[in-house]
Image (cartoon, rainbow, N blue to C red; front, side, top):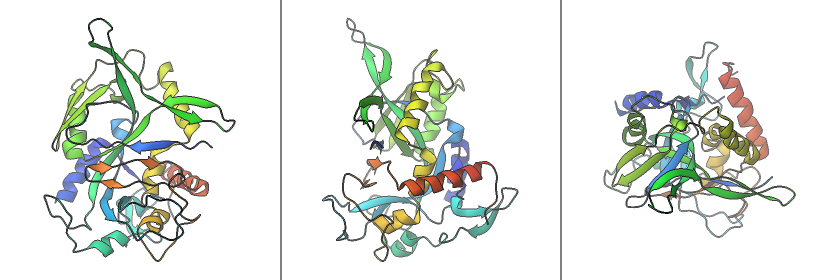
Length: 315
């Protein structure tokens, strides 16, 4: 059962250690230099954000003949299969040093070892980056009709099609995938009063690799646990998205079979552009990812996560 590393504080510690029905797309937010600003309301608390070693710019295998779409990506991201989340824990919750079946020998690690990554730092392509993830809602400034100054924020929305064909508007959820050292540490610092992250709207700007953050006053009506917050929890239940399951999926055998290993075929086949979990690795991050894994895989992920949270051991 994957034991997802979580919490911004723990992400910083690990980064330091490493240094020594309806179809709905939950996109991974790409924040490019010179674009923005971005306004976000974070759903995931700081101490509950999952983290993992990520291969960010992995060459995909040649386009399979069985693939029905037109846009097979040249590159794709993946959770490293050597990540600590796949190490079996003992009954006390301590790592045993033994990986779950099939993990601990990452395909991308072995394939790309010795190859040089494009870009400024020329790193070995097999080396992963420690990333921390959070779910957020995209927010839009509401301007005063006279002064044109911002007087508040509202949710951006997307259409979600129900099984009966009815269209329901849901908040626009995005996954934010960033490093602790240049992003999440700044988010923490912006909350100088130690408040709960979900009670604030956060404005993010980027210049080259530097991010800057500004936070609103704490919201007196929309915060975790408030009646207004129910619109987020209800929408997530409706669309069936779970951040932990998504992160684990990116390191699954099926994910590697789909995108990287030419000797393997994913369960259920490849599908096409509209019914795949397709995404491409952008030079500045990750682009859209479809939250529609195989239903059986979702059930498996949920069971494994529940066992991990309850402290059950893996046999």
